Length: 335
Image (cartoon, rainbow, N blue to C red; front, side, top):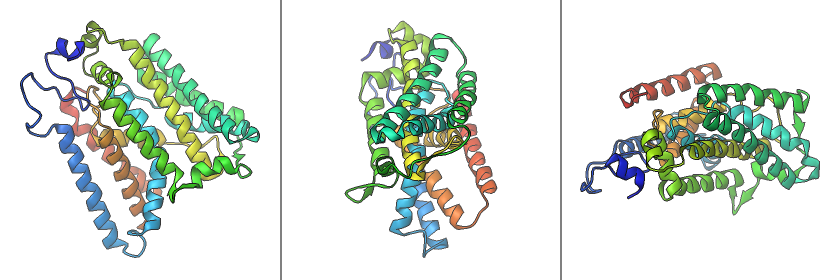
């Protein structure tokens, strides 16, 4: 038992469910597990509905590939967002950071794909570091700090690119991240899967993951128990920025362009996937499996709505309504 668990008197788990001493693991499924099972059902239902409504185009290997490829960028962002929200924080800047990181990579693309990747990920990490410093050490409210970074990062993207997209058509190495394959599987899907697995291990099988959940569940108790609260909070924003930089690599590779207006509303997609996946906005409960399923629900749903020719405006309304519903369901959890 960790010190944080000793303070609280319950055993903390990565899904944030406290378990009183002596209660076995074979009790009723936790709320998080029930939500994950529900999402699996939703995914299956969407697949069945899509197969019925669009039998010629929806249940095909090419469309599955398209869904997973589209989901990869949001998925990478959502994994980072899960850690942020688990600490009762929020990162509104990730969409703009994707744009700025992509442009930063585009400025050095003539030096090769490695330089592009290093610049994009490094720039994203740097902006995340600024967020983390302001929030953890400057004690700025996460909403305010990341809202400010949203504007700063977008402005940097426009300034560095002179308001014009940077073509990446000449870089096969960069485009490989968006269109290449590894043993027949798109690179972006492989990377998303790897990040999801790594995120699950980090959250569920490491001391760091327990600290993240403890900070979100009861910050003062975590501090008393010896958890380095500020360092944990600082680190989750650095992680979010780093993964935003990686998402920029995937998006730029797919579009063969680094655009200063890329990534608009990606923060909404990432936050929405995390929330409907079961991670609590109040902090203290997080699930990577739920986040993955949330990403897939959005990806499948909006692929189907696009095939049904539903206007983009209506798709945004549907997305917002789903997120609002998920937040309302979480209301009893002190948010």
